[in-house]
Length: 437
Image (cartoon, rainbow, N blue to C red):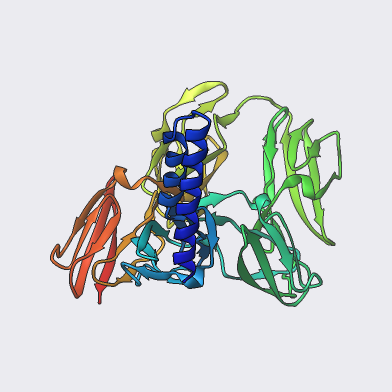
């Protein structure tokens, strides 16, 4: 009935406008065109495309002939309800993919494209840590697979008497358990921290006795609770500054004689006896007393004695930990993650080189096993040496293309079954088990 009245009103309006135009000598087409255009405006949506993350919602608003239309008066439908659903204009994203949404009213239809992507993801390098009182540990974050600066997150602790946190650095305070939380972009990750209040309180030096020539310098390295301790954190002293002085662990031989160097830290102390020969000849040196390698790499240590090159085969070489690094005629080979001391001896003198070995570059993924529904797609993110790697840089393959295919990291589920997806990059590879149901 209302629709019939509206049509009668529009017809009378058109007739009146035409009569006025004729009476005043105006063209009638202008008035007729305006009225017809208003009639043809029809059903419209406020958007053409809706982009959502899985689990999120958005509201589509309608107008009919230029007037707001109550969403409940329209009939709504979606091509693929596995990707998105709709209820009175409210769209809910269900899983990644693309589909179309339709609204129908009074014989008119409007379509809206709906694109759904994976939800945002926040992860941490650790979910559970055990620490000793007084120690620190740094937690790193990833947002959607990419490294995130820790300072960008909001960090909190459930128990500051047990553990505190600042920009991702956790400090163990006392015995107990605390939950550290990091929040970014509305997402939160938790790290359970257990603090063992006991401490061995063991202060050690890498040397118990030094034999130096006048003018020589030697760095004493400390360890506390089996971890490296910066020399600047300890308090150093010498029993006889005319024989040897010390500054942040660096001992300088001054004159012939014997002196005791003492290092103190947190109530503990360690002593090193220094014997200085008054002569200045016989100085064995290396260019670098610290080197860093990755597992499998090699490095050659070059020696000088009294300022002149020494053949590596003329010296006697040893390692403090062969599982970390070995040495043969000055050639160091990195074996496994950790630290080792390489020692070279020549004519009664010796020199040390600290070797730190890190893991070799690794190719990694977030999940090594995924489950996908038939017809769905899943994107695999790669990381090389802890950095995000563009999928197109890797070589991808599938063990069973009838079950699942892969193209630049995007896996497409074909039929029920299992397949293994393999990604290769720079001699490294990683496998992902795909189950299609």
